[in-house]
Length: 156
Image 1 (tube, rainbow, N blue to C red):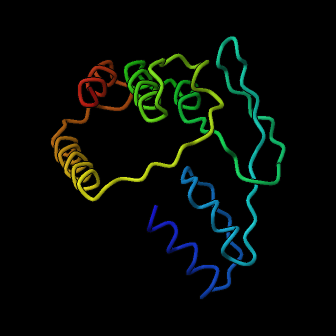
Image 2 (image 1 turned 90 degrees about the vertical axis):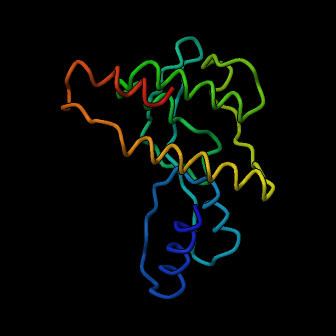
């Protein structure tokens, strides 16, 4: 996030270039309040409450989007079921709810999380361990039958 913020500020303040950002960093929407010339826009969507299916309406709306649709997009892109399940569990944990059902977490506003220095260092260590383990994974051929199994084992 920090790098995206710095690049955004540099483009706006130093280069002066018209710029379009499509990002999952909700924090970048705060630039509108602090930087002249920034406008938040989002594409409207519809989520079927019965199925959790996401429909992009392709209508540009003013303001920041207060929802994340990453899980629905992953499902639409046929991500392995175990990856989607893990994402739902992590989202439920971060939002402070035990339920991992898509109906419960869909449409919830994002919550800011502030970490202590100790928590931040622990998170950094976990990230470094993950990156090391990920770098050691054998990557199967795209579309091969072993791809889903290898992905699920790596992320569990």
